[in-house]
Image (tube, rainbow, N blue to C red):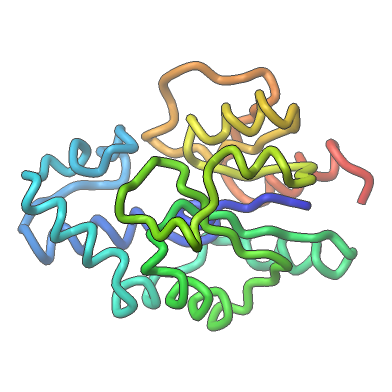
Length: 199
């Protein structure tokens, strides 16, 4: 299975967050300002603002408007036509399950499995829906695409697979496992997958 993360890999989530933050709080940030995976820190939000923001970004009204990342759907369609199994794996809140499925359908994203994984130990996750991070070890994953450095390292170390790390400001610092290759777009992901697999 090809593991494909959702936010900032197939969905332009952070670009949408920037617009929401400006609209809701009048805070101006550009994409390159988002240097921490902790959005509260990156946007300089109070806890109250962050809680409000987090609720908004997981709402159906906002999620459904996110744009796809350029090249993602085309590449995934090519993989699917060649018989590759694709698993969409996300750390989104379980309350966003139906909205995410709808977004995938609206954008004609091909996939075989959709899995919510509690990648960040969020207390608000419905444990009957979300799988623990360790669950990923039980899957037959051949290749992964992530933007979270911690999750990419987990996959690279525990599954011993090649992981394409989509370059983002929040993943440029820290330890990077030898199985992780930084990529800048879906064209590079497509080329990397060709090199690491028999397609």
